[in-house]
Amino acid sequence: MSTASTPPATTGITDKILNGVERAGNKLPEPFMLFLVLFAVTGIVSTAMAWSGVVVSVPGSEEPTVIKGLFTGEGLTWLTTTLGENFIGFPPLVTVLPILLAIGIAQHSGLLAAGIRKLFGTSPAWLLPYVVGFVGVISSIMADTAFVVVPPLAALVFKAAGRHPVAGLLGGFAAAGAGYSTNIFPTSLDALFAGITTSVMGALPGFETTAVNPVSNWFFNITSSIILGFVAGFIIDKVLEPRLTRQGINRDEVAVEGAADSAESAEQMRAALTPEENKGLLAAVISAVVLTAIFLVAFLVPDSPWRNEDGGFLPKSPLLSSIVFIVVAYFVVLGLAYGIATKTVRSTRDAVDMMTESLKEMLPFVVLAFVLGNFIALFNWSGIGTWIAVTGAAGLEGVGLTGFPAVLGFILLASCLNLFIISGSAMWAIMGAVFVPMFALIGYEPAFTQAAFRVGDSATQVITPMNPYMIVLLGMIRKYEPGAGLGTLMARMLPFVIPFWIVWTVILAVFFAFDLPLGPGNGIFLEK
Image 1: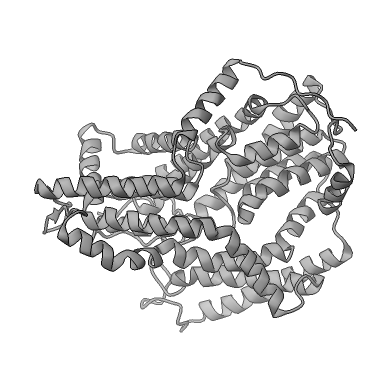
Image 2: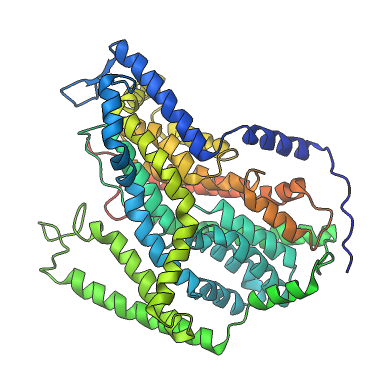
């Protein structure tokens, strides 16, 4: 079948905005070079401040912090003696890599994809938009794979149910992208954020805050995932699909190149599960029940070694320090149970290969972590982070901006930066280094600042051309709508972005107003 010709690009206001964002974003260096530049700038500024004799006093600290310069004898010896330590000791590596190994087994054995297909395939037509919304939001457990798995699968099940496939395609992508930073399950992203949050608190040595771990935002994430999943489903059902129908968008593919390849892809993305896959899911469920029973017995017995000295679990205990192990155990056990039942795991070598593939996908971050870890270490060691936090907190207090309006401004800033810096880890490293200690000085726990960042980090990434998966989605939608462009996608995504941003901010405001716990042992306000 010959493909339809694509009409000339329009020059409307939507395209002009998108082109402006793309041009500005393209001027930014790659994340590695960005942090290399930031490292150099921090070194120069710290040296100038050190020569000027700048000191800063942290509230509650008896000794003032003296700014130390990188390009001094002390600074250069610090760098040459701690370069490897700054990299290997970068907290996200300690938590992210073990979880990533475990998720690799769950993903490459087929468990995660089968679970998503089960949810899609057993849902009635009227419920499909809400299932796509919820599954899309929690699909971040598959990391970036969600952007290429969920949309076409959602389109497939929508079409099979007699609904508009483009609504499933766009809705699946919007839910996966706009809700990327939240999930009902702890993920590698939670471990990554927690590691960065912990490392940047080094700017306030001796300042007492509650430790941040991969489940520090869990209660907030569960609430957000459920509500945002419903919001996504409502928009798909009541806004997106009716609009596509009114516009007369094709329900059948009109520009398919390589019919054989398309048929093969459709077979791989089928909604219905085979008996063997259903058997694998049953094995995974049984293994989850058994593992949960083992954990409950181990943790809840009166003399459990996982309790703290008071016999409880909060605010600190060996149990909370074992979160990474627990997450790893669930993904490994369930992934192996499914893989053995479906014969995708036949030997130890298969499991090792799956973990290896998962690590390969993370190698770019490991490389980035080299400069990222050293940048944050310099930020803390030099005292610049402390100076910015104290000065910034004093400025906020001086203008009376210390309540939720300050948090709202922070979310807005994150949303704007997210148009240009797609990497959540890179942006959180930059913003966290400044705002985590700054907000701690005006009374907010690091876990709360991290939760606020999640709101601003996701919603706008589905309307920026800097998101590489927007191009992937464009290729998918052109099978139905050959003349579609980036402006088309932005117009279709906006109905998700604004409600997601508003609803997610309201959820955070409710947690803030009622001082609800964000996760086990993690609150919002620092105890005075």
